[in-house]
Image (cartoon, rainbow, N blue to C red; front, side, top):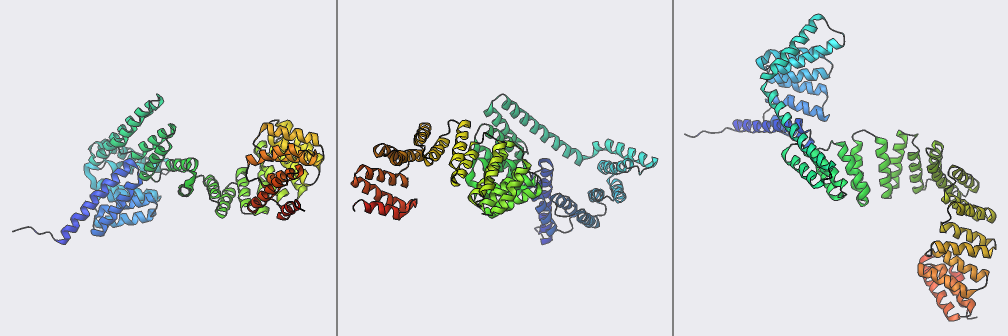
Length: 548
C-alpha cells in the first residue's frame, strides 16, 4: 500500500516552503538592508497567504515589511496583527508585533497589554517581550506619567529581560548572524581602506572583492570598488560598480547621486539616463531645488526648452533667493524666446549679487537682450556700464559696449571703449580687430592698419582681421596688390568666407586682371547661395560691369 498526497497537503507544503523563503529573505533584509530581499520577502509572504490563509506568521511579518515600504499605515499593520491573533491567540510574536505597532500609534496602554500577554505565553523565552514592556514603562516614566509601582515594574522587566536573553534562542541566533556579518564587513572594509591609504590600489580592490564574495554587504563593497575605480580614473569600471550597488539597494541615495553625477560629467550623450537618475532622486524628497536645477541644465542639453523652464522654475520657487537659479531660469526663457520673463529673472539675479565678477556676467547677458532684442540702447548702455562697475576687468562686456556705440554711430565712444579693453587685456586679438574697424570707420587709416596688424600678430588665424586689413589697403590706401595678400590669407583660413572672395575679386578688378576678377566674382556668387552673406544683385552688377 502506497501513501497518497492530497491537494490540501500539497498546498500546505507549498505554503510552508514559501514561508521559509520569506523568513530567509526577511532575515537577509534585516542584516543587509537591501531592497531586493525586502521585495522577495513581501512576495513570498503574500504567496504563502494566498495558498494557506491560516498561516498566522505571514500576517504580522508581512505587516512589518509593508509598513517599512510605506504601503500600509500603522492602523493597517494592526489589522493584520488582529487577523494573526484570531488565527493563533497564543502566538507570542503576533502579540509582540501588535504591541510594537500600538507603540508606533501612541497607544501605550494597549501596547503594555499585548506585551504582558506575550510574556505570559513565552515562559523562559520571554526576554524580548519583557524588554519591549520595559521600554513602554520607561517611556511613561520619562514623560512623568508614572508611579513608584511603574518604576519597580520597569526595573523588574528590564533586569529579568536582560538576564533571560541568554535563553532566547531566536534572539541569540540573529545576534550571532549580525555579529559575524558585521565583523567580516569591518575586516574587509578596513583592510581595503588601509591598502588605499598606502596607494596599493590593486590590493585594495582585491580586499573589496573578497568582502563582496564573503559577506552579505554587496552594495557596500560595490560602492567602495566604485569609489576606488573613480580615484584611479577608471570611469567605466566605476560606473558599473555603482550600477551594481544600486541594483542591490535602490534606496541608497548616495549611490544614486554618484550615478547621476558620473553620467552627467563623463557621459553627456546619455542625457536621458542621467535625467532618470535625477528623477529617482526626487523621490527621496531631499534637496529638491538642487535636483531641479540639475534637471534644468540636462533638459537644455536636450534642447527641451519647456521642461528646462519648468525645472528651473521649480528650483527658483523653492529657493527664490538663489541668484544662480534666477540666472538659469532667465537663460532658459531666452532659449524659449520669452524675453520679458528673461529680463525679470536676470534683474532678480543681479539684485541678489552674490559675487561682483559673476553678476557682471549676468549684466552682460541682460544688456545683450536690451541691445539685440529690445533695441533699447539706453537700457543696454546702463546695464553694460553697471557690469563694468562691478568688474572693470570684464573685457567681454567692454567689447559689447563698444559694439553698442558702433551700432549707434558714436565712433569716438566706441574707439575709447575698445582702447579701454586693450588696456585691460593687451593680448586679446579681438579687441584690436574691433578697434581697427572703428578707427577705419573714423578714417584713421594708419591707426586702423596698426590695430589690424596687432590683431593678426596675436592670432594669425583670425580671418576677419585679415580681410578687414585688406579692405583698408584696397579702399583706404588704394593699394590692391598689398590687399591681395590679406584677402588670400582670409580665404586660406576660412574657405567659406564669402566676403573675402568678393573683396579679392574687387582687388583683381582694381589691378586690371578682369579674368581673375570674373573668376572670383563667380566663386563669390556660387558660395553666396550657401552662406547668403551678400546681396546677389551687388555681385552680379560687379561681374557684368567687368565687360561693359
